Length: 346
Image (tube, rainbow, N blue to C red; front, side, top):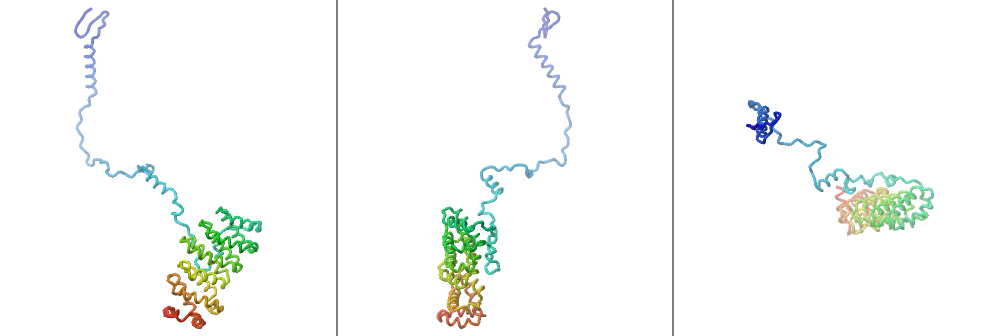
């Protein structure tokens, strides 16, 4: 065996590798690899005249990209824009009835409800008493609907128990649930619109409860329903009954809303009867009408004065006015009214 230099030779020409020989060969291989893969030097390129610069303002996100807004408030706003608001906050629908003084009769308003004739009216009349006296408000609504159907399609059955039905209706008008109250006043309007002067004997009950309801709440829907019921009463009942209902309950009421509705419906009655007929209708009727107008013309509430002075102006243009005026209105009350009349004639 021969020993020499970087390696040791053994039999058959094989070399015995040492750690030094191995390290030298690895170093030589690595240097050759680095020389083969070293990039050739390149000249630097000149910078372009218009270098690309990233925009400072970010582009708007695409429609599909979600917004980076988290937290319960953002979720609430998203839900508010996606779903409709509460019915009371939404745009309300057009619920206004016909303007009084127009040709739109309460029957036209009532006719918007689809009420079909009953198969057994007598049985339905008996059932509606049970429903109207129930403590369940939904059953009360069913009973009120039955009364409206009877008034529209079977008035001959309803008139047999008309007084009892009207007493139950006046109780329903004062129900604490507004849905029942509104339906009850609509039912009263149906009775006056379809039964006409058959309701004369009940007008004192129905008219009084409608007028007094105006003083119990400020709900505009309830006021509208009450006035529509009074519209039907004035158009359906006889003038003598109407003036008793209006003046006995509403002429001197402390609530200005009640007095205003009284003045408005007294003016409606004047349009129906006619100013010339009012002054020749009879001693009691003419006297009560002129006294009421003289009080309304100087009322503290402007809406009451509006109708009072409007009626006074219409009556003052009639031939019989001066005679009736001097006979009915006391001298002490004429001074201020004469000024109003003088101003109207200018």
